[in-house]
Amino acid sequence: MRVNKCTEDDFSTHYRNQLAKNDPRPVKRSLEDLIELRELREREEFLRGQEWKFVLEESIPYKQEIASVLNKKGLLYKEEKEG
Image (cartoon, rainbow, N blue to C red; front, top):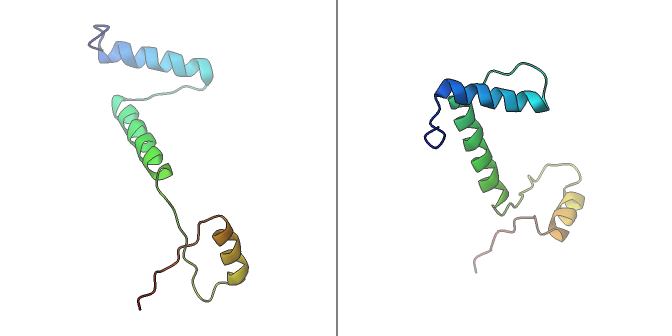
């Protein structure tokens, strides 16, 4: 808005027009919605960058088969044993 010297209403109108090109349904978005959307995308990007491992409960059906598949994919958490 500072770069183009426009008001928040001008920005909102432009933003809705751009959305309407992709989706003809009426859209009402606020600046808060845009900030929330950006935060959600940043969180998703952060989570995708994490290394995920799975732990299986003892009573889960087909535990050995699931553990085998997860292990082959490098996704099974293995607790380091002391001693």
